[in-house]
Image 1 (cartoon, helix red, strand yellow):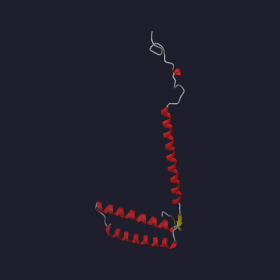
Image 2: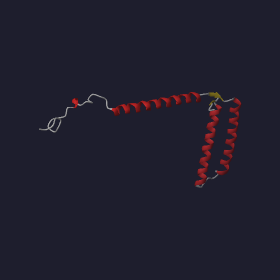
Image 3: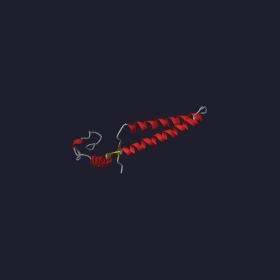
Length: 127
């Protein structure tokens, strides 16, 4: 005669002693998830505090703004002179690359001058 729960009869899981109980590995997984949530909460709290400290904005003094514009105009003149000297009759590929480099620099300086010329400038106080 076959033994109970052997090959002859299907096993009844409701008769097992740990039936209906939560497996122990799920407790470990739940604890790991809670730890990760806590780490994320701490990270986001620190990031929020860093952002609130970095949002200290102050106005750039008018004299500094004017000095920046003047120095940018001087820089534009220097780059433009170098552009005029170097790029007259650009025929070789190296001269064409140099010409394009000067044109990018001039465009960037012009954009910076326009930006500063709009009016009062706000700057972030990083320190």
